[in-house]
Length: 192
Image (cartoon, rainbow, N blue to C red):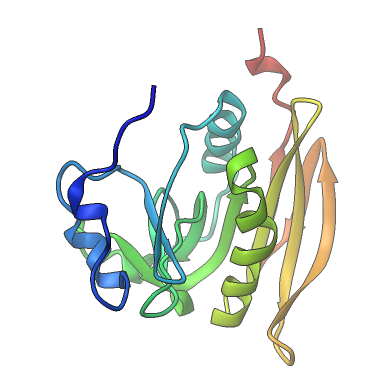
């Protein structure tokens, strides 16, 4: 069974959607909507793998006191760019109100994407380029391999504004992104 999109979705505003319009979508709009190149992207239902990886990273990613871990929020990269990384580490000073819905790129220390079949191209190609162009220093892409996460970690090379790989992590993610990170990647205790 398919569901028709509501009337407000078609054809979209003149000139396309803009980042500020996401905060004014109608109440019946999906909870998680990204804006990429002026187009609204609806998120597919998440898998158990996706949920457990997010839970693990949210629990074990422990930044210093001046930073905070957030999830299911957007980063505004430009007038027609407002993607929603699965997890971000942001400057805590930007959390000035409980009504915050998006962060500026310069306040994002790390963006994490957990790849799913429907987001594969965006998570592997589109989003990393947009994040690096915006100056986000660290990017991690989490892939599923035999029901376990594999973390591909990247750091921004500032002279060319491109990400360079810093590691491929299986079993455990140990790195430093201005603070030490040590995350157990074994999800076997969650699987029946």
